[in-house]
Length: 148
Image 1 (tube, one colour):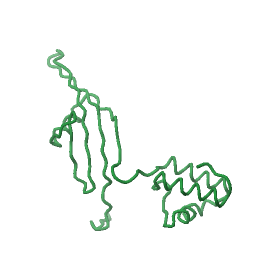
Image 2: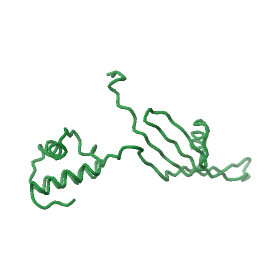
Image 3: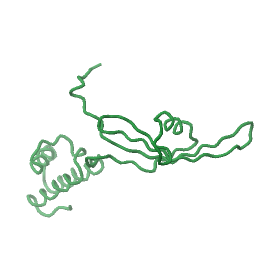
């Protein structure tokens, strides 16, 4: 197993997730009640987790316990904080396809995107939406009309 020094490890991206939970309480076949909670977990840039239950700060263990004990937990919101989220594989595939249609050879896609952004690009999926649009505009300027 390869181990990496902590100085080379990439810090986790700040992120927040919110769930709507429903927990049904029964005993001996009797319905004793239903609890509904909104649980939000947030990870900051240092990797520290904080929790909220129904909009109020709560111990992390309580929030995780609610999520684990819920009959249903529906993810209602998820967002990266701070920097923009990457475009992902689906949007990157569209960008690869567009470059191919415009005549850019597949082995040159990363170099082309790097030239458009004036920095090395190793994955189109890791680009932000603004960067993907800049690559598309550069494609349009160098190879004719492209969808932005």
